[in-house]
Picture 1 (cartoon, rainbow, N blue to C red):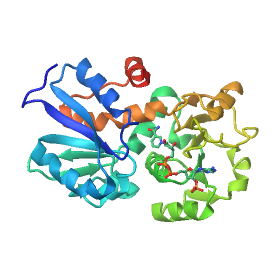
Picture 2 (cartoon, rainbow, N blue to C red; picture 1 turned 90 degrees about the vertical axis):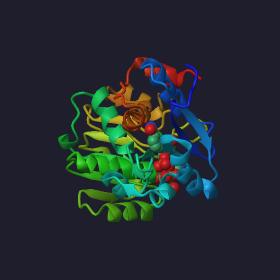
Picture 3 (cartoon, rainbow, N blue to C red; picture 1 turned 45 degrees about the vertical axis):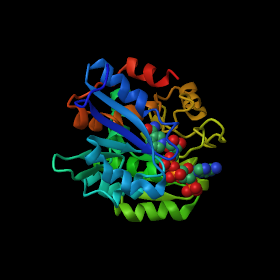
Length: 280
Ligand code: NAP
């Protein structure tokens, strides 16, 4: 579809931005729904983030996504924050309002929950305790989503104990229980959900060292890492019969609210989308 002055624009700001799969993702939806729109990668250096965000209204952009390293910085730069963006302290989706104000949202937790619910239909956060491994930016979104969805307890194991303590304190919810890194193997006992939010298991990184011996057989195992799609954690869990959910779906689902706000269509996550995003 050729572009005109009426073409609706959105994009992703990152530094670097070339690794982002969001252009393929949104590009697939634009084509599928026959929308006169474009979604472009925007390489924005950290010291230019404010200028770039403020330029969105005058360039006619509907909004943008933010990826590393901009998510936290953007939270301090937009005009308003959704409840989840405030709670997570980071923005991954900006919507330009008709009067040119920038509304910041965080859809990572939404994408995380939607991904599990689509892939493992029986799973409910209320079903039992969760073990979350890692306490970085992604973990914060995962914890907030699990708490909002009614999880009775979240065990939080992080290599650097202070970061787990800080995250638990920031969330201010007694259901978050930091546990020592060395206790992570035992902490799988009695859980309904196991989540890897560390970068361990990613191509080029060491694998996550976690014994699944005590993990209940019905516990859902999910990994935020999606390169490779089948991490060692997920293949070990599959081998012992646990249901597993890969991390690609979180990326796909977190993109839905932004697309709907910018382009006016509620997009579907399906196999064709997965294939389009995995294609290159
Ligand atoms: P981050 O803020 O940098 O946090 C990294 C986490 O990994 C920390 O908990 C860190 O522990 C831990 N870690 C790193 N190396 C480790 C090691 N050698 N041993 C033990 N722990 C280690 O990163 P993030 O933004 O949260 O992202 C984490 C992962 O999630 C990345 O792989 C990212 O690609 C993925 N992610 C996926 C999606 C999705 O849509 N699927 C969305 C967001 C993020 P310390 O605190 O001890 O350093």
